[in-house]
Image (cartoon, rainbow, N blue to C red; front, side):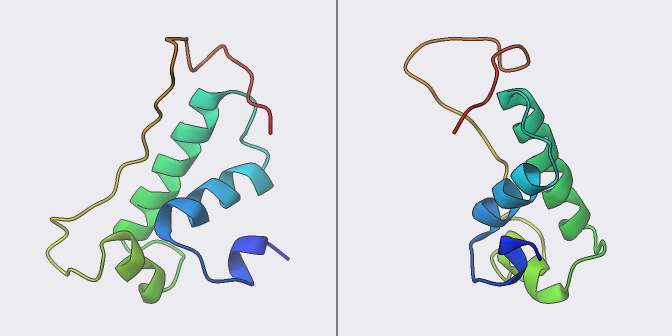
Length: 86
């Protein structure tokens, strides 16, 4: 069973755990792409519950508070070639 389905998390944590557990963590770019895909599916009423949808839009029905995964680092690098490691 997925960790993100057995414990309470925020929207970004949920999307991050999904990316890791689904094997989409080869590079930092892969993780960002996977997280953005998960969020878009939920925001558009995808396969997840409406409660998760509210987490991703912070409870707003207008969708004007949508979340977007981003990455910051102390040094520039190509997110699609740098391997991700925990």
